[in-house]
Length: 197
Image (cartoon, rainbow, N blue to C red):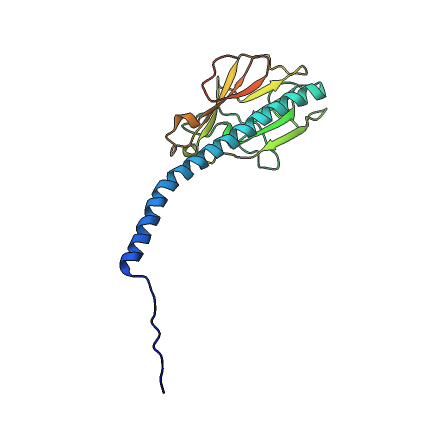
Protein backbone atom coordinates (compact mmCIF):
# COMPACT_ATOMS: atom_id res chain seq x y z
CA UNK A 1 0.00 0.00 0.00
CA UNK A 2 1.37 3.33 -1.05
CA UNK A 3 0.89 6.45 1.09
CA UNK A 4 1.81 9.84 -0.20
CA UNK A 5 3.74 12.10 2.15
CA UNK A 6 2.39 15.63 2.28
CA UNK A 7 4.82 18.44 2.68
CA UNK A 8 3.87 20.95 5.40
CA UNK A 9 4.38 24.64 4.69
CA UNK A 10 5.20 27.20 7.39
CA UNK A 11 6.94 30.50 7.96
CA UNK A 12 10.64 30.46 8.42
CA UNK A 13 12.16 32.29 11.34
CA UNK A 14 13.55 34.96 9.02
CA UNK A 15 10.13 35.61 7.47
CA UNK A 16 8.54 35.86 10.91
CA UNK A 17 11.16 38.34 12.12
CA UNK A 18 10.68 40.43 8.97
CA UNK A 19 6.91 40.64 9.54
CA UNK A 20 7.39 41.58 13.21
CA UNK A 21 9.88 44.29 12.22
CA UNK A 22 7.45 45.77 9.69
CA UNK A 23 4.63 45.80 12.27
CA UNK A 24 6.91 47.52 14.80
CA UNK A 25 7.91 50.23 12.30
CA UNK A 26 4.32 50.91 11.22
CA UNK A 27 3.17 51.04 14.85
CA UNK A 28 5.92 53.47 15.87
CA UNK A 29 4.83 55.81 13.08
CA UNK A 30 1.07 55.47 13.63
CA UNK A 31 0.81 55.76 17.43
CA UNK A 32 2.04 59.38 17.78
CA UNK A 33 -0.33 60.49 15.00
CA UNK A 34 -3.21 58.65 16.64
CA UNK A 35 -2.39 60.20 20.04
CA UNK A 36 -2.32 63.66 18.48
CA UNK A 37 -5.70 62.96 16.90
CA UNK A 38 -7.14 61.90 20.28
CA UNK A 39 -5.79 65.03 22.04
CA UNK A 40 -7.13 67.33 19.33
CA UNK A 41 -10.52 65.63 19.38
CA UNK A 42 -10.83 65.91 23.17
CA UNK A 43 -9.94 69.61 23.16
CA UNK A 44 -12.40 70.28 20.32
CA UNK A 45 -15.18 68.42 22.16
CA UNK A 46 -14.51 70.30 25.41
CA UNK A 47 -14.33 73.66 23.63
CA UNK A 48 -17.57 72.99 21.75
CA UNK A 49 -19.35 71.98 24.97
CA UNK A 50 -18.43 75.21 26.79
CA UNK A 51 -19.00 77.45 23.76
CA UNK A 52 -22.41 75.87 23.22
CA UNK A 53 -23.26 76.33 26.92
CA UNK A 54 -22.36 80.03 26.77
CA UNK A 55 -24.51 80.49 23.66
CA UNK A 56 -27.38 78.65 25.34
CA UNK A 57 -27.09 80.78 28.50
CA UNK A 58 -27.26 83.96 26.44
CA UNK A 59 -30.19 82.81 24.30
CA UNK A 60 -32.14 81.60 27.35
CA UNK A 61 -31.71 85.01 29.01
CA UNK A 62 -33.08 86.73 25.90
CA UNK A 63 -35.91 84.21 25.47
CA UNK A 64 -36.99 84.34 29.13
CA UNK A 65 -36.42 88.07 29.57
CA UNK A 66 -34.63 87.28 32.84
CA UNK A 67 -31.04 86.94 34.10
CA UNK A 68 -29.54 83.52 33.37
CA UNK A 69 -26.27 82.39 34.93
CA UNK A 70 -23.72 79.76 33.99
CA UNK A 71 -21.44 78.83 36.88
CA UNK A 72 -18.59 76.46 37.53
CA UNK A 73 -19.74 73.44 39.54
CA UNK A 74 -17.72 70.74 41.26
CA UNK A 75 -20.81 68.60 41.90
CA UNK A 76 -22.76 69.05 38.68
CA UNK A 77 -23.40 65.29 38.53
CA UNK A 78 -25.16 65.24 41.93
CA UNK A 79 -28.91 65.45 42.55
CA UNK A 80 -28.52 68.96 44.00
CA UNK A 81 -25.81 70.71 41.97
CA UNK A 82 -24.36 73.96 43.29
CA UNK A 83 -22.04 76.66 42.05
CA UNK A 84 -18.41 76.30 43.11
CA UNK A 85 -17.07 78.64 45.77
CA UNK A 86 -13.41 78.20 44.76
CA UNK A 87 -11.53 79.84 41.92
CA UNK A 88 -10.17 77.98 38.91
CA UNK A 89 -6.50 77.05 39.15
CA UNK A 90 -4.76 74.85 36.58
CA UNK A 91 -2.32 73.65 39.26
CA UNK A 92 -4.85 72.50 41.85
CA UNK A 93 -8.04 71.86 39.86
CA UNK A 94 -9.37 71.58 36.31
CA UNK A 95 -11.30 74.86 36.56
CA UNK A 96 -14.53 74.75 34.58
CA UNK A 97 -13.49 71.28 33.39
CA UNK A 98 -15.18 69.98 36.56
CA UNK A 99 -18.53 70.93 35.02
CA UNK A 100 -21.10 73.72 35.14
CA UNK A 101 -24.76 74.46 35.61
CA UNK A 102 -27.05 76.93 33.84
CA UNK A 103 -30.00 78.40 35.72
CA UNK A 104 -32.39 81.35 35.90
CA UNK A 105 -30.71 83.66 38.41
CA UNK A 106 -33.53 86.01 39.43
CA UNK A 107 -31.47 87.91 42.02
CA UNK A 108 -28.26 87.90 39.90
CA UNK A 109 -26.10 86.65 42.78
CA UNK A 110 -24.49 83.71 40.95
CA UNK A 111 -25.92 81.15 43.39
CA UNK A 112 -28.45 78.52 42.34
CA UNK A 113 -31.30 78.79 44.84
CA UNK A 114 -34.14 76.40 43.94
CA UNK A 115 -35.80 77.02 47.32
CA UNK A 116 -36.35 80.72 46.70
CA UNK A 117 -39.79 82.16 46.09
CA UNK A 118 -40.10 82.34 43.14
CA UNK A 119 -37.84 79.33 42.62
CA UNK A 120 -34.82 79.57 40.34
CA UNK A 121 -35.09 77.14 37.45
CA UNK A 122 -32.26 74.79 36.49
CA UNK A 123 -31.86 74.84 32.70
CA UNK A 124 -28.92 72.54 31.98
CA UNK A 125 -26.21 70.59 33.77
CA UNK A 126 -22.82 69.63 32.36
CA UNK A 127 -20.92 66.97 34.28
CA UNK A 128 -17.18 66.63 34.57
CA UNK A 129 -15.30 66.89 31.27
CA UNK A 130 -11.70 66.78 32.56
CA UNK A 131 -10.70 64.40 35.38
CA UNK A 132 -7.32 65.70 36.54
CA UNK A 133 -5.02 68.67 35.91
CA UNK A 134 -2.75 66.31 33.94
CA UNK A 135 -5.65 65.85 31.49
CA UNK A 136 -6.02 69.61 30.93
CA UNK A 137 -8.07 72.48 32.32
CA UNK A 138 -10.52 75.27 31.48
CA UNK A 139 -9.35 78.49 33.12
CA UNK A 140 -11.15 81.86 32.86
CA UNK A 141 -9.14 85.10 32.66
CA UNK A 142 -9.88 87.11 34.71
CA UNK A 143 -10.99 84.63 37.37
CA UNK A 144 -14.76 84.15 37.26
CA UNK A 145 -16.85 81.56 39.06
CA UNK A 146 -19.96 82.51 37.12
CA UNK A 147 -21.20 84.62 34.21
CA UNK A 148 -24.67 86.17 34.23
CA UNK A 149 -26.41 87.26 31.04
CA UNK A 150 -29.13 89.88 31.29
CA UNK A 151 -32.44 89.90 29.43
CA UNK A 152 -30.78 91.74 26.51
CA UNK A 153 -28.08 89.05 26.18
CA UNK A 154 -25.30 91.17 27.63
CA UNK A 155 -22.93 90.28 30.46
CA UNK A 156 -22.22 93.88 31.52
CA UNK A 157 -18.68 93.00 32.45
CA UNK A 158 -15.19 93.32 31.17
CA UNK A 159 -13.87 91.32 28.24
CA UNK A 160 -12.83 87.84 29.35
CA UNK A 161 -11.62 84.57 27.92
CA UNK A 162 -11.49 80.89 28.74
CA UNK A 163 -8.26 79.00 28.04
CA UNK A 164 -8.89 75.35 27.21
CA UNK A 165 -5.51 73.83 27.99
CA UNK A 166 -4.21 70.62 26.46
CA UNK A 167 -3.16 67.57 28.53
CA UNK A 168 0.39 67.44 29.91
CA UNK A 169 1.19 64.57 27.54
CA UNK A 170 0.48 66.82 24.54
CA UNK A 171 3.46 69.04 23.72
CA UNK A 172 1.79 70.83 20.80
CA UNK A 173 0.90 74.39 21.89
CA UNK A 174 -1.27 74.74 18.77
CA UNK A 175 -3.81 72.37 20.32
CA UNK A 176 -4.82 74.92 22.99
CA UNK A 177 -8.10 76.74 22.33
CA UNK A 178 -9.61 79.97 23.64
CA UNK A 179 -13.18 81.15 24.02
CA UNK A 180 -13.34 84.93 23.89
CA UNK A 181 -16.32 86.73 25.44
CA UNK A 182 -16.83 90.40 24.61
CA UNK A 183 -18.11 92.87 27.19
CA UNK A 184 -21.44 92.69 25.35
CA UNK A 185 -21.67 88.92 25.85
CA UNK A 186 -20.82 87.46 22.44
CA UNK A 187 -18.63 84.35 22.62
CA UNK A 188 -16.32 83.07 19.91
CA UNK A 189 -13.71 80.31 19.66
CA UNK A 190 -10.13 81.16 18.67
CA UNK A 191 -6.90 79.24 18.17
CA UNK A 192 -4.80 82.14 19.41
CA UNK A 193 -4.78 84.01 22.70
CA UNK A 194 -7.57 86.57 22.49
CA UNK A 195 -7.13 89.96 24.13
CA UNK A 196 -10.10 91.87 22.73
CA UNK A 197 -13.03 91.42 20.40
